[in-house]
Length: 127
Length: 221
Image 1 (spheres, rainbow over the protein chains, first blue to last red):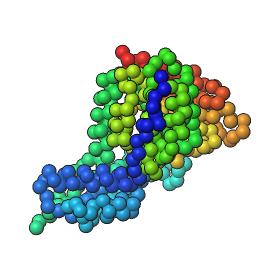
Image 2: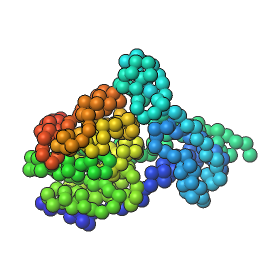
Image 3: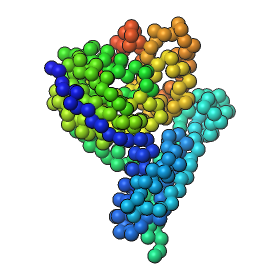
Image 4: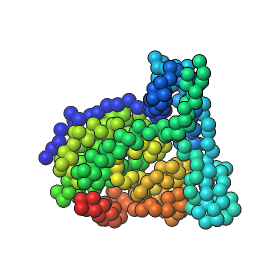
């Protein structure tokens, strides 16, 4: 039962921060629209160190994607969250100094990621 | 005009999660066990899929969604086995998202499918941030990549349900400490299941097939 895969290629364009920015902008526009706002002046974002999202890239894409929307010219604010780990053995919480993750107190490598993965919108400021 | 602050408190990717839930509901209605397969380029996603397709062929209904930056070389290999496949080309994009998977589902014979493989774009940075509608996440790591990768890409290893450690046949040639790797992975993710395998020699694949076969059976109930 051969399947016609050759006719079934779906092409999309989706660079990493491009898609993050697109999602971020549409969320902000939706919230502004719900509030009946005329203009978005600031978008407050929280990004973790482990989120894989680079604020500068989001800023660049935003300047392009935000044109012709009520978010044009809005300031983007990035609150960066450092990586915070918790040792599963002694429960010590710490930020790792390098990529060799181990508890500084007991040396355990069984660790829970407490924070550092955030990628959320805290609030928007509108007029 | 006065400035007003609107509290949002939502993930930036909330829309993707909503779409993924739609995909999941659709797949659940048909009792299709769906795995999202992630790894770096060249770790063996396609090799694992092809071996698994051959193993379960004519036993259960299968389909594949192939995500790649470009080309249809992987889809062509699946197609040659007579398994329904849809290729998604992301044109430079580094991950699949739920919106890309939805139209791919339209093109597959879901009523004849028990097991759906979604092969993500080869990348260890971000695919884990985009839920697609899967039941399980399967990550493939391979010996040539080095045993320190869980520390370099912790979020990927923390989010997965299964780690398939491929290319165990290269063990005599590489300084890869399998025990240290397992310890690092389970340290980040205590609930993970790890299968050391070689897709080339077939070593260890029986355990992977047994796990997958049981999961498919459970979903069909």
